[in-house]
Image 1 (cartoon, rainbow, N blue to C red):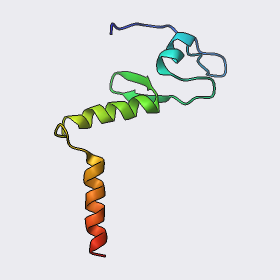
Image 2: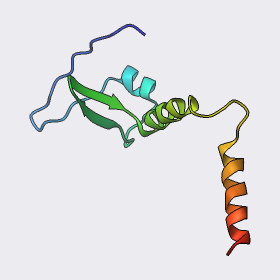
Image 3: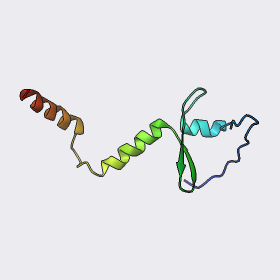
Image 4: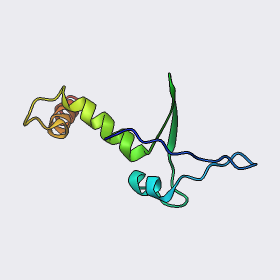
Length: 84
């Protein structure tokens, strides 16, 4: 995706209106929640859903294909329950 710059205006009370196009891309509606993350060179605007997706993608490289972490967890819990 190419870098795009969008100019926003700050109101007198410090509010910023996020353009409808950006809200659609983020998948947020009025009253929705967005995350503003401070980074080394500025700020990043994301949603909780997007951050979860990024974390899942980052973890995929550590999981072997065909392995179900859910199944492994259930098996571990059942084994632990046997010893209680």
